[in-house]
Image (cartoon, rainbow, N blue to C red; front, side):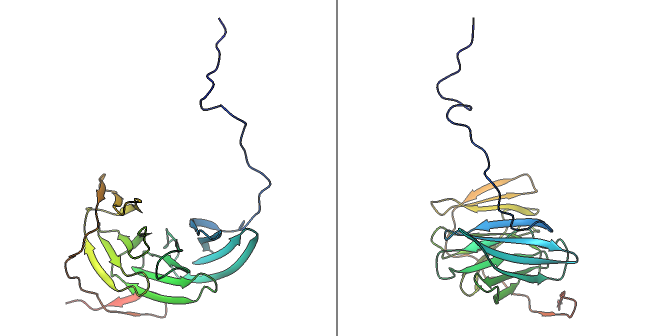
Length: 212
């Protein structure tokens, strides 16, 4: 007997596809991108021997800036458009150099940076925009005030690189690590004290740390 397809299912409704594309970049390897609620698009890409951050409006397509942000190849794997809270209008970029940077979303000017002393991989903003979190390759999370990068606390929910990082709408934080662990946890006050390691930039773009 002939089979009657269900009224609802994977193939129900009109077909969907892609319209005529607008090409934003066709020459570089794009490593990460993020959208803002105002229709802005930010992405980090590998250009020859370094990494660049670009931003554009999408409705209509209107490029804003393209800035060299890191002299080390393949160093940046995430970008975050901050469109709420006290740091709204900025773009946050973590890097494996161990430096977290914030740039102006319109001009690309560097606003602030924080040196963690360990590779930083991902960044996430709390639903209310009041807390910025960056994950590291040693399993740690760094908690910041988004507008100043003042360090609010440090936690270590993983034993290896934290490759997934996102807030749930209720404010809980989800992390996924290369230690094969997925963690969902509430962010609470009373984080332990942490020490910021001072560093100095070198002409090569690398940083020197003094440890004892």
